[in-house]
Length: 143
Image (spheres, rainbow, N blue to C red):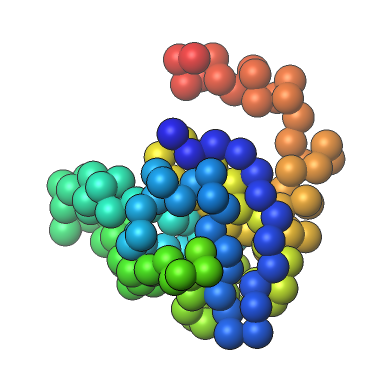
């Protein structure tokens, strides 16, 4: 299970260090794509296959389904970890997530999220997110 929060910096070529604690679960090759809330999603090969299978079941005749599939698949790239534990984030993905230097990688169970550090701080701030609000909303999700 992917968990934790890790701060790193992109190098001048757009490479990012994969935290050692996440490397085993992600594998040497994994998929990075546009995510929700302005971040990037990272999936292990196995989790990406599961995600793709779910996407294949969406009805082609539904515009929202087509938009959803296009959003995730059009930006998807396969990444490979180099000998220094780094991987390259494509320029179009860095641009989408507004990543220039400082980033935060978080584990959220079956995937990673890669955030611009400032955007993550704002998203994760007390003004934006309240533990009490989250707890109240969990009942709607059956938790």
